[in-house]
Amino acid sequence: MSDTTADKLANKTPKRVARKIRGLSDRAIAWLFVGPTIFLLLAINIFPLLWTINLSFTDFKANRINREVKYIGIRNYERILGDSDIWLSMQATAHFLFWTLFFQVLLGFALAWLINRKFRGNDMWTTIIVLPMMLSPAVVGNFWTFLYQPQIGLFNYIVAFFTGADPSSFEMLGSVDLAPWAIVIVDTWMWTPFVMLICLAGLRSIPDYIYEAAEVDRASKLRQFFTITIPMVLPFLMLAVLFRGIENFKMFDLVVQLTGGGPGSVTEMASINLKREAFEKWRTGYSSAFAIILFVTVFGLASIYVKALNKVKER
Amino acid sequence: MTRFFKGLFKLRRGPWEMVATVLIAIGVFMLMQPYVLWAYTYSFIVTLIGTVMFIIVSHFPEQE
Image 1: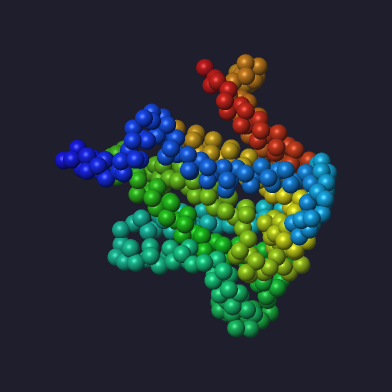
Image 2 (image 1 turned 135 degrees about the horizontal axis):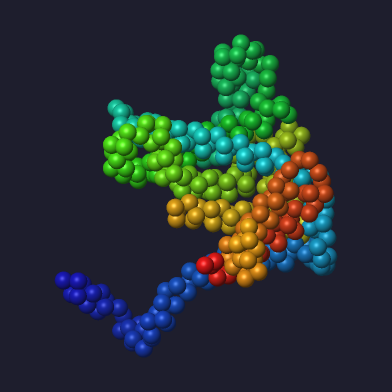
């Protein structure tokens, strides 16, 4: 049957094309199929990376393309690594990265653990919980801006209800102390479901017989949790942290929509600073060097993380 | 500890990857710490050395 289908398909190939392909080796045909993908990969990923590295050693400005481009060595890198504003944006990024990962892992795992238990309406709750991650960051940023409004925002009223404070006495997006936490809350709200889904996949992959064997050995529920559940979900959890870590390191849209980097520059992430240097001040060479610094940092972190992930999988 | 240094001398993957990993971790910490500016200034070169080292040493043979 399959031969007949294969023959039919072969007969459909135009005679001129068939004649050309017949003379090719298996390796040549493989290259023929893989070639376009490799070409696209080189054109879209590798070439821009090499071009950015090249630009990072120049004083090129994209808004003055007729100006003579000078090679200035590592001066862009020296300026960036001595710039206290960029240092502050790195600290803002670190704060955002650490706390979003912390809360997302904690809440994501807890939710997955609860959803994994069989109860009525399980599927409905899963659907409701994953809704935020399906929304566009622009939409989320917009409606959280309304929720954070001191006069009419629901968030302030809920906080006021529990703490007894005046709802208009604090401004989540306008306060230097609260704004970094405001963006952490929104990102956690939006992306905890993603971590939950990955953890849920991990929890559902644990076979029941392992728990049954533990029950036979009279292991307590707490012991089962720490010696079976956590070690077996750990690779999944690490994968979720890797994905979210890389995403949050280059967080842009949500923060721009919520605070625009303010008040002052307390929520100005590295990516927002980079965009300002590249497309507001038009310092293309300088921003290319900045992009390379961020790239090397993420690449280095991802390398050691993938190594750790492989080690956990091997256990 | 002796095994670690032997691995380093014999150009084995495990110990060298460990050195590269520590360098990357120190570099990233230096980049994002809020305490001293000089650490931030030298963070990139430390991370870069660690990352390049990691790429190279991951092709070294495994330790017996």
